[in-house]
Amino acid sequence: MRSILISLSGLVSIITLCAQKGIPIRYEKNMLQFPGGTDSFETFWQKLDSLIYTGKGQIHIMHIGGSHVQADFWTGKMRQLFQKSVMGGDGPRGLVFPYKIAKTNSPYNYSSSYTGKWKTCKISLVKKPCPNAGILGYNATTYDSNATFKIFFRYGETYPFTAIRIFYLDDSLSFLPVPDLPDSLIIDTFKGKGYIQYSFKKPLETIEIKLQKTDSLQKRFSLMGLQLMSDEAGIVVHNVGVNGASVKSYLKADFFIDQIKIVKPDLIIFSIGINDTHEDDFSFETYTARYDSLIKAIKQVVPDVQIIFTTNNDSYYRRRYPNKRAYVVQKAMWHLAKKYHAGYWDMFEIMGGLGSSWDWWLAGYMQRDKIHFTKKGYFLIGELLFMAIMNAYGDHLRKVERVD
Image (cartoon, rainbow, N blue to C red; front, top):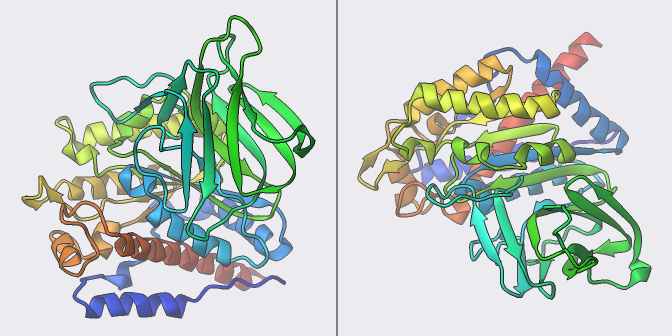
């Protein structure tokens, strides 16, 4: 039997140390709650059982949010902990985007470069439309057939991959994206609806994509994202984050649902909300209605996906006073978790409730805006959420043992 390598005592010591430094963490509240019951979540726990006990297969976790998620400190910490929790299987990196093209911040563990002239957009810009955005909420378009882009890992983190899936606007006007590799390394090519997939003879740690004009009608290439893949068993944690994004933003992404269907996540963690509370039409009714629309569309294409809702962190509104709309988000997330038999993680209460971000800032765990965390703050939040999920999984294991 394969064992789970989780140092919960180590995480508790981290949390205790932070409390000693003046952060008002309520770590007794650090748990997943299931207001609609836990029965439907058993399907996810059973997939985790299978991976741990047999060492075969992959589990795909997708974390969706705004700037908290795009930078990947929060999600990246969970990725590290999830992949370390299962012996012998790290899994591939999953979804990536060449953010340098969009002149925005990349996740800390990989970066990109590019050549040629590109026009980019993101779904969170209210006054600027972003046609042909996909699962990652960005689009990059070029009319230069000599343009290229490259993805590479950094800071010692590597996620070798043996296949790549490129999401793009696949029509008669599009150039063909092709890996800049010797033909001998590309052992298989598969063209699906809205993407092309290449398989490689050996694991790679970097990839450059060039464009080919294969028809006189072709005049542009419109990129939505990439997925780095392998057959290695493990847990794949995708960070799907767009700076400034609200729920309404994701509803505007033309190919978001189509590409969710292709990636097929087993678990989605929703952390969209901090930007919604700054919108003029924010209310319990509009916020839950938009989430309903998003979840129903997702459930139509991946009906068995399980969901965890995380509440907003405590934050300051316009840097002046605590944002009491966090209470509305709490109520909405609880309502949604009950309706969809999902998990609920109350980050707002766990970090100390209204006004607690001031103490987190003084201790160096939040930035001056009291909305965003610092790197170590995001790492801590990632550790807390991971621990809450694994404690809930422990409840499942104890339940199975009682039945046996």
